[in-house]
Image 1 (cartoon, rainbow, N blue to C red):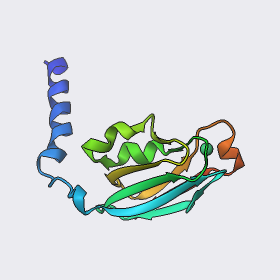
Image 2: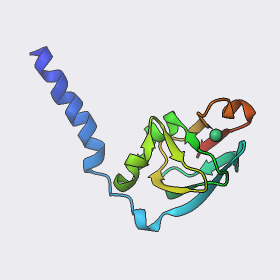
Image 3: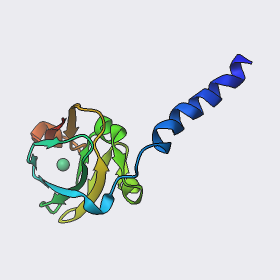
Image 4: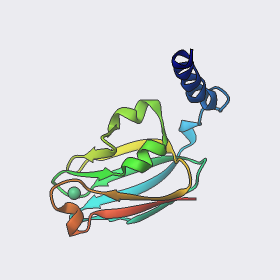
Length: 133
Ligand SMILES: [Cu+2]
């Protein structure tokens, strides 16, 4: 009996928040741009409001690859279904001279860390902070 109840309760807990929430209006997303370059994020600090739909626009000004990794931030966020495949292993890969848009609503308020996971890039300065209010 106890063993059979747990999955059912978990399913209810997972489905409940989605069933009564309005789907976000992705078309009205506010654009927030982040430039990736050798070796920084500009701006280094993003301040987002909880409950607002954003289009995070990651532009790589360099010719080599960079990424924007913020595992906890992306795990907490409500990412637009069409953009979910762009976030892998908690980050967004951006090829040289490319731009990648990810629409999302930030999760719970707090301060999240971001960094580039390419070898030594974070130690050269590719780190940042995302503040969700
Ligand atoms: Cu990098």
